[in-house]
Image (cartoon, rainbow over all chains, first blue to last red; front, top):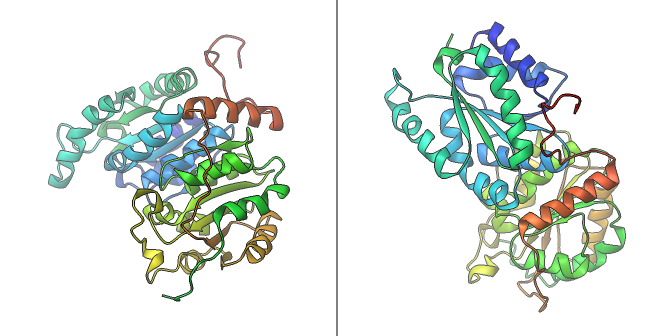
Length: 167
Length: 210
């Protein structure tokens, strides 16, 4: 993601009401993660495992925060246990903002199969998700993700296409 | 391996700790840890039966969201070892109001009793100290446990207290409440005691709602 887009997305997250960020560094969104770390508008936690990160988000929500994770595509696989055993079981929302490695045009062989599994995995987890391809689409999508969190008390997911995250 | 055999019970640690609990938020591990938590101190500010590996991470998020009050994880050795990376996150995240009590019976007691790594060579408190957690101790008696707990709950966290306990568990009944009801009651307790609004169904985005 370009530094300019990272700042735009940071502002959109704030405007949508998010205020608690969990990150685990990922190639295509490290600029966004840096922007979140530097922003005074978010409580930020750097984690070493997305499952741990999901549980931290759950605790933050129980304490009154509006949490989200910025992670790479395969991080959703790592977070699956927490998303089911904690979020789905207790009814706790969190927003997952991820990259979309493995989409059409993927250049790295090791990313193909994890990415291909993600839409089906999210469907199996009954996590509403949207693939967003333009930064301009994110504004509405983040507001709607926040609304779904509040009404469904269940995780939601926005997958950012490489058209947003590359560069 | 120290060769020392635990003699104190998890239940007795909870009984000793109970008089110190006021508006604390407590999250209990699966199985008998949560049964005992409910038996000793049934409170609206408790979450029961959180999943293995998720107890201390969830408490870290709670502690950051509620910095004015103490948050306590009633974790276990098997649970901590399942997601042990959280120690590194705790070691690098300022959360003076977080205490993780690891009731270490050195076994997977609820699922047949086979040993955990802490029943062998692994020192969970040592791992916590190496991860950057300043107050991380192992205790063998209720008296030692209470010294560590008083220090931790004075806001000297993040703390990890590894309480070496027996596999013994008194015959207490599980609470008759599922996770959804538990969540609602807990959140209402947080709202009432903090003045914050957590549950906001169907208001975001509506004109005049925010």
